[in-house]
Length: 549
Image (tube, rainbow, N blue to C red; front, side, top):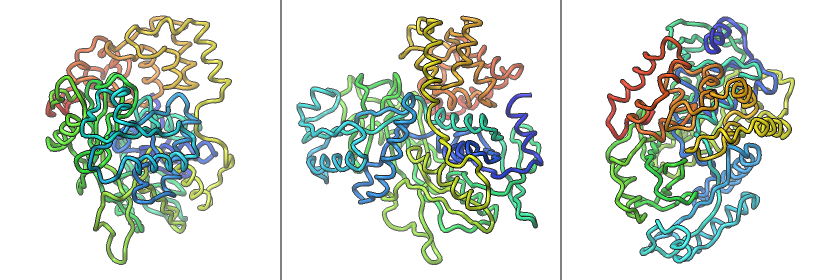
């Protein structure tokens, strides 16, 4: 029996301190924080972990410099401190990166004022990153010749951070940490509805999406971490809240790398919003749009594609203009923006684009129900801590309260891994096309679990061979994923545990030598069915959208 099947058996009929519904970043950090402090926690998601909003981010970990314009200093301060904590505690995964912003002539804010804003941003962030720079046009021409400066006045440079791997890899590592601390996590399990019994416990009906089997989960507390579907779940469970969501659609396009320099190119698009060209390995991620949507899921339109392509072509000196044919993959995410009730209605009039990505945690102590609204990856550790405090106030004991539940393993574990890797001469096994040493990559992705990968390679050196050609994934990583990462569909691996589907076209993935062997490792006798399922779905999508999840 695999981990997922075993966990579903353990969900049914048991009593938990907390049931978390939703396995995106908010649910994942809540589970990791609570299990680390000794709570008995279950988490379910009707899709894969991180398969909705959390898989559509820009991979940036930033303090929200744009919120300075609306004078939200407290929010910027909070986000900057959170960013700093992530850089400090996840040094292999979250790294500082420079942003270069070009300011066009006639822009609403003078270049000098933008520079002063960047200095304030640096100060609010405790001077943690490298200081900002005021750039003349010649500085930009020298450092980033791809930027068109003929209509510019110069620019600024400042620092924020980014995820080296993809966003959902980061989310899953919190899920894995919660599993390691005794939590019961299950993907593809849908919550149908929750009711309280006479003794004050919640009974949640749930359905295994794969088998159709229904189960019942009993818990003292329910945490609604359903992201953009939080309002829907609250209605199902008859929970009244003071907050709800508005939705904004953000689209990013993935293309071949447009600049060799590893920095984020920053512009102000034709509509005045921030617009980025973000490094993504050997690719570039370009966007984003900001469009109000009222129905889910959001979809990429030709207008979205043309808006992004037109803006980047106007602002970069490229060998030839980018077209729709250059799109390798697309990200289309919904941003749940938090608003509060006003009287009998909701405050959703006015300039909705000024709404920030702050989160709100609403607790109903009487019913022992918690709803998480909004949020972003940068703020995730705060969410975990705030949910823990809310659960504690509801009478759930946290015997290890205050224990550090996040961050990479201690230095001695890291040192032992690299010592063993050196003894094995692991880096000599790095594939020629790889962008970094094999030891560095395995530690960043798997942390202390990477020690078991070393043992796999020690027993069979073929485990260090790249299995899916055209990617950097080696054979033991696929075996590890099959054992420990609860993969149900091929998409779970290609799009979320890895970023293969973000940086390779569907046709290249489908024909990649080694992919069918990977499917056999992941799915056994269901390998062909899972292969066909993934590529049949993508074959029904427009070509330029075919690689997105």
